[in-house]
Amino acid sequence: MSTIFDNGGQETFKFELLTLENGIYKHSRFITNYVEVANIDINFEQSIVSGANFIIKHLSDINYLTDLIKPWYCLTVNGTTYEIPLGHYMLLSPSKNSSQGLVSRTIIGYDLLKALDQDKTLVSQSFVEGTNVIEAVEGLLDSVGTWVKYEIEPNDETLSEDVSYELGRSKLFIINSLLNMINYYPLWVNGNGIFKGIPWSPTPNIAHEFIDNSLSLYEDNVILNIDYSGGYNVVKVIVNQLKEDTEPLEATLTMEDEGLGNHPFSYTNIGRYVTQIFQSEATSQDYVDLRARRELRKMLELEEGVNFNHAFVTPRLDDGIPWQGDAYRFKNTNLNIDYVYKIIKQSYTLSTGLTIRSMIRRFKLYV
Image 1 (cartoon, rainbow, N blue to C red):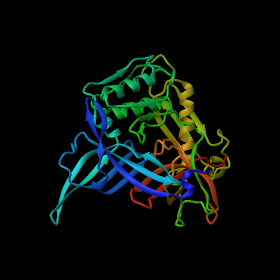
Image 2 (cartoon, one colour):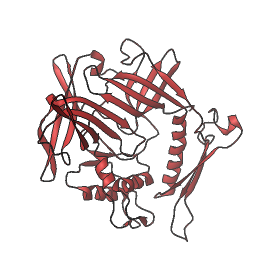
Image 3 (cartoon, helix red, strand yellow):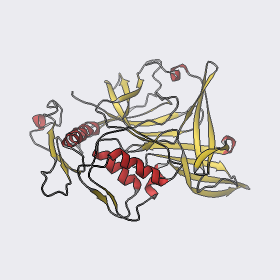
Image 4 (tube, rainbow, N blue to C red):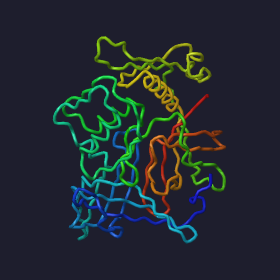
C-alpha cells in the first residue's frame, strides 16, 4: 500500500478562521502566524470524538462564541502541495493570559458534535412507528441550525414501534440512539466539518499499513497491551418494547456460534460462560442479530491493543480525520504481530515533524 507519505516531503501547517455569516460558516482569513501551539485529540470511545487545544496571540476581533478554527496539514512532495483538513473546532474556553507584556489565549476547542450535545430537547421527543430512522436523524440535524452539513448513508429501515425520549435529552444522544437501532456507528465530524453516519461493518477499512521496514513510518518504542479483565464470551441483546401483544425481540450469541471456539476466552477453553447483557432499541430481528454480532466482535477488541508513535498518514486527501471503522494493518517482527487493528485514539501536536500517538485495538481475532 504505497502512499504519498512514504516519500517524505516538507510539512507545514496553516490555520483558517471560519465566521458564521447568514447561518453558514465561511472563510474569514488565515491566522497561522498567530497560532503558537496546537494539539488535536481523537477518541472514538467518547460521544464528542475530537477536541483541540490552541495557544494563540490575542486577536481582538475573534468571536469566541461563534467562530471556528480549521487546522490544515500541508505536505509538499515533488513540487506538489497537498492540503488536508483536520477538523472544525469551537472555541468555547478562551482563557486570556498576560506575560511580559504579551497577551495570548489558551483555548480548549471542541468539534461540532459539542453543538449537538448542548442542544437539548425542551419537551419529550417522540417518533411514531413506521418512521424512517435516517430521515429522523436528518430531521434532528436540520433542527440544530442552517450551518449544519451532513452525509448520512441512506437506509430503508423504519421504527417497529413508537419511540420516545424524555425532556432534556441532547440531540446527540437521540441521534446516536437512533443510529444504534440500525447498527450504524455513532455520529462523528470529518475534517471538513461534515457530520457523518455510516453502517457498522464487520470488515475493517484498512486506512494504512505500518510495516517494520525502511518505510515503516513508526517509531521503535511500541507497547503491546493484553487484558482479559473486561472479557465475555456470550452476548444477549434484549429489545425494549412497549407493545404488550408482541413477542420481544432478543438474540443470544456465543463465541462458538461465531466459530470462535478456539479463542482463549471462549466457553470451550475456560469452561464457563461470562455473559454480557445489552438493553437495546432495534427495528427488526435482523438488526438485533447484527447488534449481538457487533457486541461480540467488540469483545475481541478488548484483549489486545498497541500504542505507538508514527508519522501522519491518511487514505483520504480531502480528510485528515480517521473515520469510524478505520483500521491499520500493523506489523512488528520483535513482538511477533501482524494483524489489523481498529483506530481507537489519536493525539496530534501540529508542528513540523508531526508525530501522532495512536492507540489501536486488534480488530478480528481467531477466525
